[in-house]
Amino acid sequence: MLEEVAELKKLSSDDRDSLTLLLHTMENKYLGRLQTLTGSGAEEIKTLWLKVWGFITQPIFSINQTQISIFKLFVALLIFIIGFILGALYKRKIKNMTYNRRSFTTSTRTLLANMGYYFIILIAFFIALNVLGIKLSSLAFVAGALSVGIGFGLQNIVSNFVSGLILMFERSIKIGDYIQLDDDLRGYVSDIRMRSTTVSTNENIDVIIPNQKLIENNVINWTMSDNIRRFSIPFGVAYGTDAHKVIDLVTEAVLHSELKEDIFENKQRQTRVIMTEMADSSVNFELLVWVRGDELHKPKRTASAFLIVIYDALNNNNIEIPFPQRDLHIRTVEDTFTIKQTSRKKDNNE
Image (cartoon, rainbow, N blue to C red):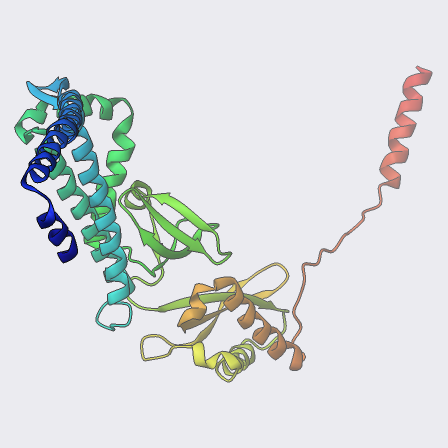
């Protein structure tokens, strides 16, 4: 750089003036054109942006004298999507944070997660309405339209929604409860949502039940207050068997079997064997036993285990287990048949 400056100093004054003139000419000619091109490009971009902005901010329709544009719709939709994402993150965070805390049951975790999720979505909905410029007071016509829609086909959805809120706050049915709706449908409550409840059966089948059905119909909750239930196991013995011996034998066999760890007993709840009926072919008894823990969630398997204990006890003590028997008595009809035949011959001769 110093060498170049030294070379310039060696030039004469006329040469330096000519070089200066050349540089000024190049600056005015080329750099000015570059600035013109740059200014023209910026102006075109600005003009294009103004056109696009005018298009997306131009009202496309109005709601109760509130102008709605594409830009407002896009921002409102973006806020609503963000609300869904935040709600899902909150729901997952609550379940993960409280998973190892004993003070929070599965039902409580699900209740907090679901209520927080819907609350966040509701807040996002109101913010989106505010961005659109729609006030709640201007939604009266929307409420009227919804009332017409409810009258034509949304009554079930609204009813299930309200029923879901009742289930969440009333907590008559909670996550983890073992419920029964009929003889063929029973299982664990795995989730309670605003519209429906999921029940997982022992066959690992998830059944989606509308919340309205759980509110209006009879539901058997096996584990609402505690985890204890009485099983009634019927069986029968042959006539002539000592009833007192059967009662003592079966009671002792049950209380000393491998199932004793699952049996619950106190002063009010005791294992008993009672005679229920003197039927046509057998004397019928019934084992009344209280079961606690996870075994009561498998009623067929639990009943089968007690029946095996009863069968072994009776069989090992040579007590007959009867089966239905019928005695058939045949009466002779030969004389009557002969008389009828004779009477018919007389009629023919006449």
